[in-house]
Image (tube, rainbow, N blue to C red; front, side, top):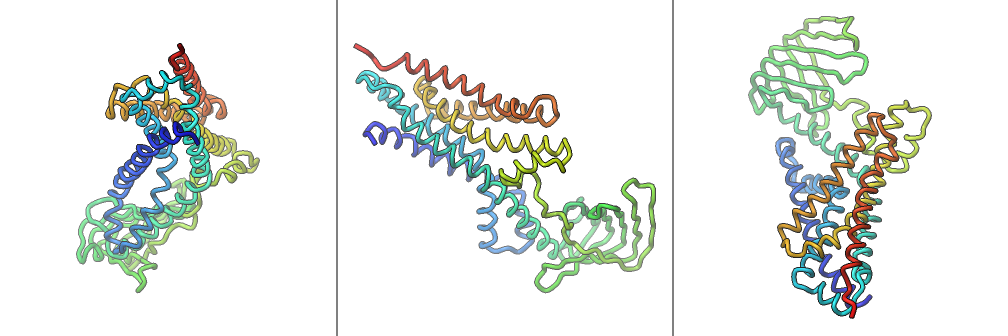
Length: 366
């Protein structure tokens, strides 16, 4: 590797590493803040907290990696351009393609890594983090239920308690909506109730006293009413609570589901859109990373804040177009393949145009 390539790589990698770490920290704090209450109520230690952090972090990388790549390349070339080093290189007859060789190395590496994360690491960590959070919520339930708010600790189960004692373990004025069973749903009102938990807190139940149970069929045509003195609800996850959604599937599983004739047409379309998003977003990392180099040279006088604003504007524009076209595809308005490739084609055209302008600008020929 030439001295020039090593110099440019150093200029790119330092802001890339800083951007990657900073963006991960910001997103992690934002994600953990709403989870502090169940974490504290579950009585988890540092080991579980670090495990949760390790599971959540990879879910950001599919977005953080392209942003950090754009920021790293752009800020690196902004620094070179601001200090007139790019002008000096052009004056020495250095071709733009020689300056772009290390950029291509970085962006192509980011593309391969992003594709692997999007296809395999992201779905695996999503499934693991969902399972861990649901288990954490179940542990938190053993410590009590919050009062005077509609609390949904488990999908399909909502609890409201007007008053409580002992940290929410003994409750008064209870309303419970239970739709965890697919063939029926229940409304329960009770004067009082209490939390019952096993010694290891893995089995949790809500015992209700002096109340009424209304059980309805899915179409609400048949309703059974029962008064009770004591009624116990197991606060357990629904049997299909751990079933993966399309975002939890590996890229090969998505491919199978998208072309499986057993799935409905709408389901196949949904899987297909998710599949193309998993492929096109990593390719966008490659395109945006290459675009950042001429941007950094042409806007070299904007400074650090201007560079960050320019990077965010480019990425957010790309991602907004991607989401808009994905929504059109899911609605059946446009073909999925064409829709999901539009953002990449638009920014590929801009990248080619900027690289052409860069080639015309330098080097200085005597």
